[in-house]
Image 1 (spheres, rainbow, N blue to C red):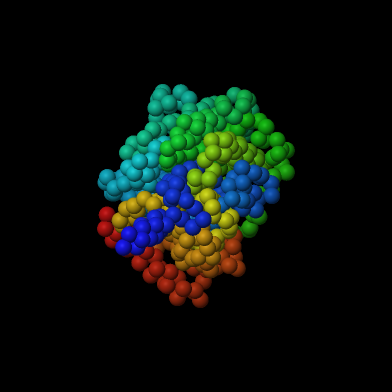
Image 2: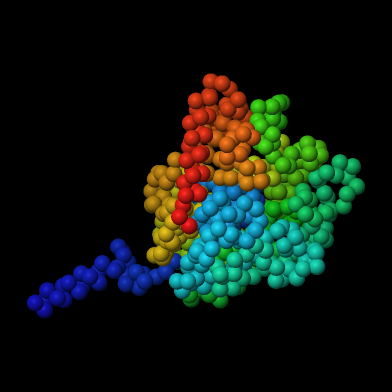
Length: 487
């Protein structure tokens, strides 16, 4: 009887030990380091195939983790996207369709970092995680606010501590030029959501992202002996394109920068809401300015990538690589002249698609082609860390893809552009966009297998009417499911 009891106890104890592990590892909690860039298109990263803009530090995360090729945001500008990924709900469920506080419809439900905080984790935000205006929310003395204490549309319940990173933005000392609506060149560098390039004097720490990386490194050292969820928000490459001079050198002279093809009549077959809010035409940017905009964007990406390196070096220096999940992404994509479009809001792939890399200790590096959405990060990391996943959130656990990159999570991705009343269903073969919930403001349909750059709108062709009707039914069902979710 005694031998039997001892055997059962040993057997029960063994069940608590992971394969090839020990009891101490069974109790180990993963940390989460969430790094998010602002307005970053996946097409600008060398690990996604860019041959001009080199991003070695982001590439190093990809070399250790799973890189997703079909990751999509849920809102194609900052406010809706960030509220969605932090809450695990789609924008029309959160009620955040602009730049308001992140809880109008979900009340006091726990958000992503809040679940970790409520389960014993140190939860910190450094710079922009929820929406914060750029450059207005970070510039020093820009409009009389104390930017050290300006938190934007933040959610205080999500954080143990939060830190901001003021910087000079478009007022930085250096050589600045306003590219947008400045055809005669007489306008000085200006603030706001404007295409401005500043080749800045001084080093990395003069600017917001350098301060963000430094603070994140300090926090990693300070909290290395306790479980943490740390959000590190870099504001570049959001306009203004401001970076220390050295980051501009690889992209000069600017006239060597290539632009996407310009197709005659490209806009003729798309509805008016499908023409982006910033275009080469309405921004009055000639070819010289367009090429300089690409150079300024890439320089901002290179500067941001260097700051990612500072954070990752700190992770390694503090012995945290083997127990920290690292995520790198962006809140949405960005146009760099495709279709003569610039910036965000559009629901085409360059704007709705995002880079996404997830590195989990012990998992093999891989590339995953399954559709995934940013709101999936919340339930995925909670599951990996053994924490409760709140009922009814709309994100999915994609952790199986980290062991089997061929695992399919979704058959389509969904995104919205609320200011345009635009809705996207992106499948493997087709991309379907409608404007207005009744599609009254127009429809776009692209065969992305044969037309990956989305030049030919099939929705205007009568022979595709049945396919359009099929997608409209799918969209109606998706919107109903989002709104019927029991909040």
